[in-house]
Length: 407
Image (cartoon, rainbow, N blue to C red):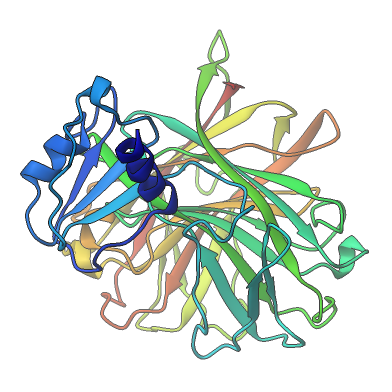
């Protein structure tokens, strides 16, 4: 019993035995894991490997053989899916200063994680979780409980909730701007993000993050944001029968209502193009370029989840040099946003050679009224000089399907 308790404590705390590793071995009960027991994984592991263990009880009755012979150069990590911060950060780490922006203050206090710009309107950093195992062909719902020391929502700090898939450098975010009812106050508010992993292997892992984005002098820059709790669990989505296509754009009839937004702030303006079956953008040689195509308004309903599928291609043949881009959904009434993208990713995440690639984003609108509207955007983010800066990225097709989400 003491041996079982000891190994459960290791999994709960996510103790890192060494930082160097060459591969990740997954352990869990059921399909989709490399091994069913920690014992088997430890025998197969080589120096520098990470053994990532899913939630569960690992005992002799489940096939464990104690004592488990674990090399000191092997990392054993737990895959927690719930964080309440009652006894500390639970494996979440503060990223510190992100150059060239100012560094916020961060703390664990009163069973929650906090972050504050301490007066700066040029401040960004984040708390990041330990790794969490995901399975192929599963859908996940991440729920953050967030509060603020600001008493008025319009003065609360802006923030972003993010999930980063490590295997292919995809990410998903939901952004919260401090207007209307979107922002939290001293009363805790829940924010949800639906994650649809895209992977070739049976398992992969993600890291969650809680990002402070302090760029608005009108916010209460001395206030704090807190995450009180984070939960990640599998959910099921069921298509509406008969299937509901909420919107579809093929760009065979010119832009079909999509509008190019032109120059944005201090960034250089990209070159837009409209071709039969495509709308496109090029940085026109600039590594400091940003703008986007914006869709017409699309009506959405309360208690529905929407799967947005984007077909994206590039004129570049080398996937490592494709211009970075972002696919975004903005909820009109409360300035919420959902994003997936590929910037600063590996070549495997990009389209290349003129062949379109599908990218999917799950959107769960949060509203008090029965209906609202969203707008989609196709963003070019040319910030990397190593990309082919005279190439184009193209949006070839967008489809939105409506689903019902189950617990």
